[in-house]
Length: 341
Image (cartoon, one colour):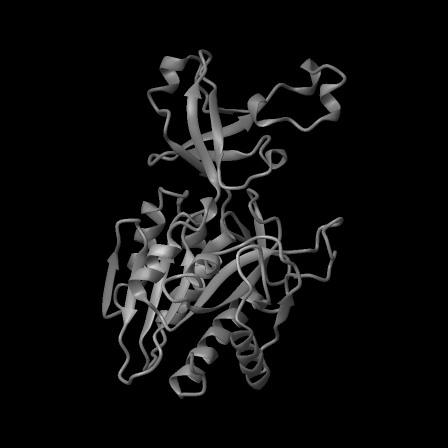
């Protein structure tokens, strides 16, 4: 299954080699040209058979992850974040390290050895280590080196009613939407950009947009869900099962209102449910794309993701499939001349 292959592939920011190859294998027979750039972005260009605005679809390949910094004398491994991770979600989580996917588990001092004051505070990053079962630094160095990267070892699984859990739905769900979309045929020029290093500052999207120079860009993303108790706008901002989420603004950009209204009209006419993303927290590649060159008309469609940036994330498969349908109908609208940048 596509979502399983994409979410289980390794792809820390700056180390997207494995996920890029997985995506390449999925799209290579569906584009006129497939290539990468110096940043590591993956592009698939489909020329179409008629003139029209050049559309850029964009989703980032990288995921939040861990970076190995040093190995203690007892073989335990010190690490740092790549991307935004809450230390509180790390304790006891299984990970895999490096190209050989060495298994490990994140641990810390047990409660029995903690002072009373320690038990009331979250365990900080400095107190966490990855344990790969080594007893000495020399033994650990046979398998892991400083500079290696680690990702969570969560496997894809469908649970409950039309829900799926895995790591890295942010943003492998957007990548999956693009893979499914490229398999459909459109008669306008469309460039599919699978970008790198979004989680550490939207770094791949700017060069990608500069190269493509699109007339319009559509970013496909996983976004925060507000269903956890205590979340701002609890149960109202964006929820799993509410349909594709259309953005008004976020921390990186105010999205083009013409684009938003067009997407709402397409959804209404196609009978596709949707929701408005009612929060400005977070950002995505549109924050860089819309500022490229003279400016690019840009919009974002997101899939609500529970527990985003955590070892186990959860999405609605209905939201995922409806997002694919909405992207297709939007491109059909552009193809028929019903939308102009």
